[in-house]
Length: 245
Image (tube, rainbow, N blue to C red; front, top):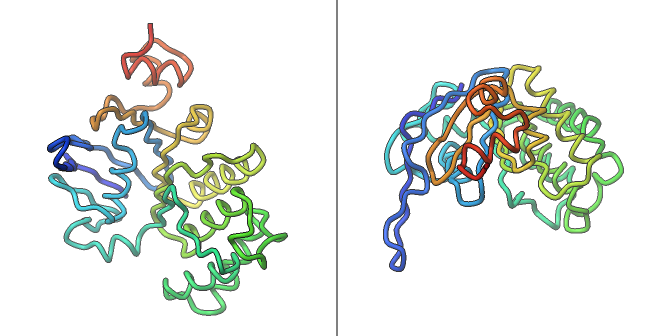
């Protein structure tokens, strides 16, 4: 459902000149699969996700999501995806219920479907206690649950999640992990970026490690272990970055 072929993105500025943030990256993600995209800060993860979400235009290469190409059919691509970015982008003066209802309308959901879907997500993410509170009064975990609910609201075929559990306590992170597992079971295609190695090892069917804009390796945990001779994902990750003794 996600097909990425030789995707690159260059940025230019007066001080550093031109640099490749993403350099000839290719991978596929299938329906019913969680694909982890791991890398150090500045590796090109977020740039890759933003290109796939049609927020950035690639310098070269191509990608399609559920059959729609990101540069030729960006509006169709946006209909296929739920994108969670690092900044959440919530409206502080609105309550979670108002945000979800608003985004449901933007996605063309009728009133009955909106109400049913919102109630289901509120229950699944354990949001009942704060749905009527202004978002700028909520904790980080409550805001993240709201952002996840908004991302999943319209039941997109493809979920692109950038650091969905960053800064969360263990119970809240676990709730979000459960929601991702449920999405996978429902046949969704999930592209998942995280710095939490334990989380990636638990959730992801396959993992791609990116560094310096280049994809170092893609594989299942078994394939990554066989290739590196390491067992824990943390050691595999460091080995692929050339940082493991």
